[in-house]
Length: 153
Image (cartoon, rainbow, N blue to C red):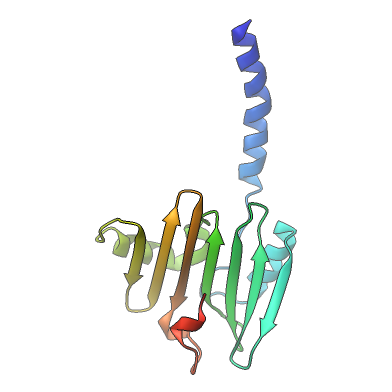
């Protein structure tokens, strides 16, 4: 009888888990263009708030898991920075082609409560715990002139 209950749960849980993993949200990619943000909003069915300044715009989205992701877009239409707070996001997706650069730099750092990586172009800072993470990543070479690192929150 116990085996039947376990099998019954597996027949429900495994397909549900597969659907959730298959439908996991994609996010804008650091260094790519603004069109990836519009795709994300539609895919996530997320609410988006856009704040426009003279030098850049911030596209803020809330995911189904409660994570807030901010994507900073230059006037040229390039995502030059991302920040997050909430459930840890998929950094491979957020960083795109810069993920390997992050991994190489992270392999030489001591693990603690926070991570600070700075390469020639990529800067990534993150902290938190398993269910809550705060972080930001940006590209030094893509920062618009006149924009301070401190503006990326």
